[in-house]
Image 1 (spheres, rainbow over the protein chains, first blue to last red):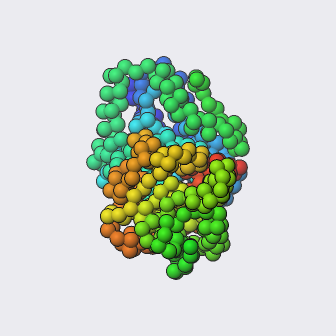
Image 2: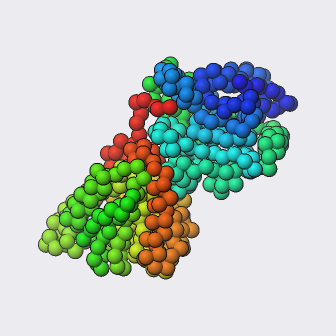
Image 3: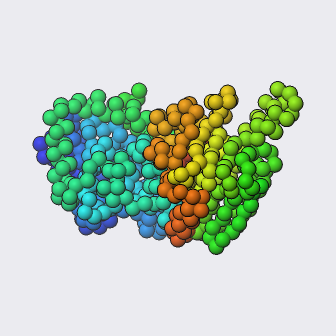
Length: 239
Length: 240
């Protein structure tokens, strides 16, 4: 499902296997465990998280097939992803998404929930697919999109044309920080960026707190609709 | 004053006559009714293009009608009436279950610019026509939903300043550079309409479900939808 590796000060979270890394309850639980492990590591306030994946997909979004057969899992997946995004927003360290494959809908959202997005330019795209598959986009997704995509025209292109955004186009739109040659080069670039950030000597707790303040609107929207199972834990300092 | 034509997938809303296409209660009611018609006839693949004849897309509210009330308070009341009754036009466009494109044949000023901004895409002429928020020059203050529209559709503070505060007449090339319009590549009204038809056909080919399209569009503009009383998005059951 996913592995967590530590290389010096870099935590590398990898969605493993050659599948679509659909965000079903099992994978979301596995990622949550990994994040919990990261938080409990004493070196975490001086570390970096890099999230990446194997295979053709970063993540192809929620497990819609599962939701078809068991509709009660819809709010469960939604609640777990909200929780994960809130977790990433309060995480006491910089976060980097090394997007080495397609990222669609909730998978695109997951990538955007990182501070930096690096992406391979040779293949793969970011795709807010909902319009094409006749799904409404949740308000809290829109809050992330508003925060992370600055231009109204770019936001429109992403959600209202369901554009398949390549890395270079993503850089143009300000969604992707840099495009890299191949999957391996993307991960390499993420590691290099991570090491640079570590050298910068950031205090993770301060960093996480500031990020929460910056993304306050997103946290409010995530927390405000708790119609899913369980509440959503918004951790970290509230300012 | 205003016609609605259906050409295959396309709804063509035209502000007719070689005049300023000013909005007064009658023209507003007509536009609203035609948008209602388009909505009721919409199908997968429908697209709306709004354009005009002559030198103006629209020069805004009918201030002459306001002033002809005979008194200062009467004029203020009439203006207020127009401002309020135009809100449903903006709301109808935001709610329309199909992509919308404004093909600016000419000048779009004040409420005319608002009409343009209420569309998903704006194409302008390269050679003629300006965007102009005339209010600052004639001493009028700004309705809250006008400001919300500008905030929603225009991203940079420099662009917002140029549009709202500077009283500047913004031509096609600059409008593209400021991110206000999507294109100003054609040097004729026919060229602009043709280009919008090209875009419309691409969008129509996607055969999107209209109510999903409208829902996603509204969720892009929660502040504006709030002011207009439009439900921005479906909260209760997030669909997966």
